[in-house]
Amino acid sequence: LRESQQTQDEIHRATAILNIVLIASIGLFVFLYSTIIYNRLSTPNYGGMGIVSFGLIVLFFVCVYITFKQGHLWFAAYCTIGAYFVGSFYCGYSWGARLPETLLLFTLVTVMANLLLGMKKGLVIMVICFMSLSYLAFHEMNTPEITTWRNESIVLTDVIPYFCIIGFMFALSWISRHHMDRSLDRALLSEQMLQKERDLLEVKVAERTRQLAKTQEERLADIAHITEFGQLSQGLFHDLLSPLSAMALQIERMENIPERKIRDVRDSIEQVSKAGKRFAGYLSSIRSAIGSGNNVHQSSFNEELDHVISLLSFRLRETGVLLRTPEHDIGMIPIDAVQLNRILLNVLSNAIDAYEGITDRTRKLIEISTNHCNNEFIITVRDHGCGIRPEYMTHIFEPFFTTKEKGKGTGIGLASLKRMLNKIGGDISLDGKPDNGTTITIRIPQH
Image (cartoon, rainbow, N blue to C red):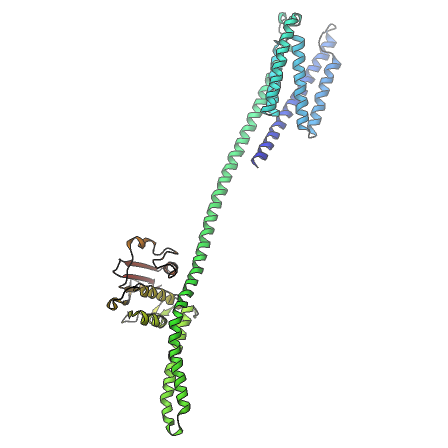
């Protein structure tokens, strides 16, 4: 693309320069042609160029200009440079290499070739001009009579070619510099636009990356929640089988009871009713855990805590961890029941995991406390487990960071909880020391 742009700039510059050269040349030659005609008519012994010969030169440049306008740029450029070279050589051959017009014309040919054809071709033409001047210098030395013009006085026809040739070279230099400045401005503008596009692209890429990371984190959080529920399913199904077995035994007992003992059926029915209520409680806990709720943005803390304890009951019995729940009910909390269930389930699961490898049952206690102050609901969960190293504290809420062994943690839970709480204006903080337990504080705004 850059090479194509450079080629287009060269074509534009060559077109503008050749257009000026041809128009100025035709104008100059028409003026000189008119002076030749005037001198021929007014001076019988005029010894200058013939009218027909000079008329052919004017006609040649007109034809070159027409060819140039028809789109043959480079052909017209070579014809123009060739015509000026022939004119320069003619002047040098007729009046010597030291004629000012000869030197200026050869200089004009070199400058014109350099601007129209480029550096390499311009260098070749410069060498040809130098060799021609060398030949014309030897010719002048061998033909002294061609320098008779040195003893003549300067007239107007001598000054006009000087002025025109120098004017040509100045115009060519100005046009070249003008196009170079425009090319430089375009290059600077393109660079600025490219930099803006690059900056905008970097912003878009960064924003898109953040969106993708956020989406991925949310999906992984859901997967982690499902995985955690799957890990609880073994103990949960064990607890579900107990009331079902009790119901089946009581129904079987009712079928075998004789009619005389029909009053004993009431006790069996009561047992079946209690087992059914326990079964309904487990199903309610499962419904809260997997996220099916009524989308009410208020929930009972104690009710959701009971659901979570039901889900974790098997792990609590298996690990020997005791729970100390709040003595007072803080009532309804302005947060969705599913969200509160996920918060409690995640925090209590981590607290149970903190006792892994600890055999001292006197330490296996999880304390849950609640408070309501400064328009905030504060939930505190404290364990006396392994604690957290100081170097981990600054990374504990980062996605995919976990202190658990490989395969036992995803590093998504706490990060998703913090994001969830920040959306509603709440917060979650953690404080802990190695072998001194961990305290997690959750703040939920009242409004």
